[in-house]
Image (cartoon, rainbow, N blue to C red):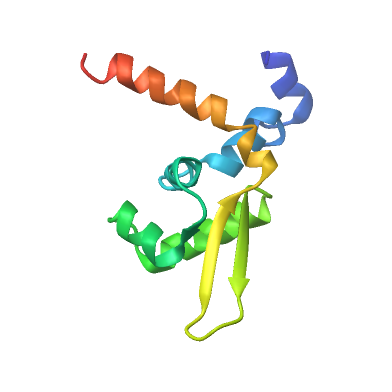
Length: 112
């Protein structure tokens, strides 16, 4: 993407790069996607336990945003106690090669 593309759109948030950041940006979204890529479906409490430092409120809001962006499927089972599982959509699956490249970059550069 060139500077002309940014100037034409008016600001960086209206570019494809800006869209991508809005979907996966922040402290937790890529971690949630990575977790779901490794193991799915995952129940809410299990996800909270695996991630650790995230609060219930933050995990809930991040999952809702990922669901609204078409990245996560939330499946609710009508039982008591309630059972909810999360998995990736096809759209999220298309992002996995990019996440793998980010992991490879981290492996190569984390020991420097």
